[in-house]
Image (cartoon, rainbow, N blue to C red):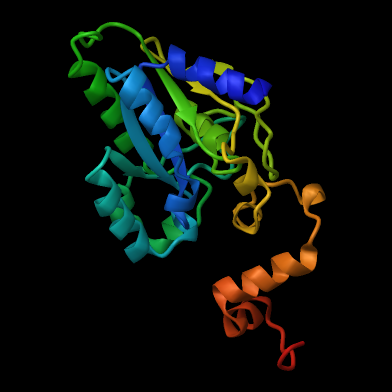
Length: 244
C-alpha cells in the first residue's frame, strides 16, 4: 500500500513522467492506467517512454518498437550504465543509439542519455509553464526491475539511487537532483493488477522476487513454451531427451 501511495504522490509532484519499459517485452510492462490517470487528471503533464535494456534485445526489434510507440508518446531507446569509471562516475557514450555497434552496447557506459536529456529540455522549453527557466520535476515510473534507478544513476552520472539484482529495491519515493533545473523522482515499482502480480508472465519478467515463486516447475514449463525447447537447450548448452 505504501508503494502505491508513494507512486501517486510522485505522479502529483511531477511535471513530466518517464515510463521505463523493458525493451525485450515493452507492452507487458507498460502501465496504461498511469497514462490514463495523467491524461485525465493532469493533462498538462508530458509522458515520455524509455525503452531500457536495449543491449538485451535484437536491434531490429528495438527499432520497430521505437517507431510504434513514438506514434503515441516520445520514445527514447536507452541502455543504462552497468558500471562506473574512476571513483563513482558513470560514463556516457558519445555515439547515438542508432550508431552504436554491438561491442559498444556491451561496454559499461550508458547509451541514449543525451537523447533523453534533449527530449526533457525540449519539453521544458516548449511549455509555457516552464518558460525555459522554471525548475522541472521528472517522475520515473515503471514495473519492478525495469531499471528505473539504474536509468536515474545513468542520467546523474553517479550511483545515487539504490539498485539491485532483484525486484522491489526502491521501497519509497526518492528525490534526486540532476541539475539546477531538473529534479528526478525515483518511484517504487508497482504491479497494479493483483492477479497479474503473481502470474507466470510477471515472474518471467523478474518482477517477482525469487523467494516468492511457489511453482518452479510451472515456471520452467512456461519458459520452454515461450522460447521453444531447442532455444532453451542451445542457450544453456544442454541436451535432454524429449519430455526430459
